[in-house]
Length: 88
Image (cartoon, rainbow, N blue to C red; front, side, top):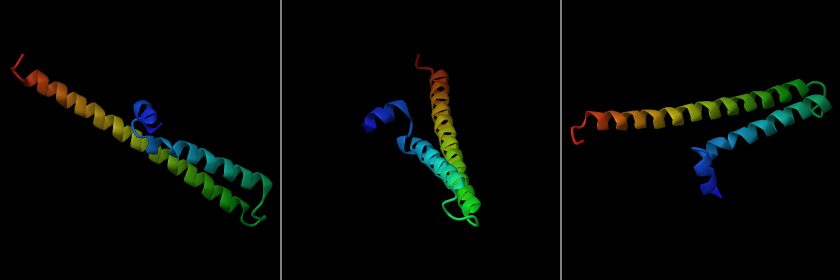
């Protein structure tokens, strides 16, 4: 199963941050709507859960930008070396 993820996504562990962020965001909304933590701490807990969700999505986005930029520069460097070689 991990091979399927590796074929589709560059790094499956980085991709797992998306459902985790969604779960944190849903938990934050549930805490805010229901007021489970009491009137004093409801906004505090919901805000931190939303903050962690946004941070997880930012880390995921930065990770994929880094992976794609590394793969792009590697391919560009390989093409440059092929073009510069006189072995054609």
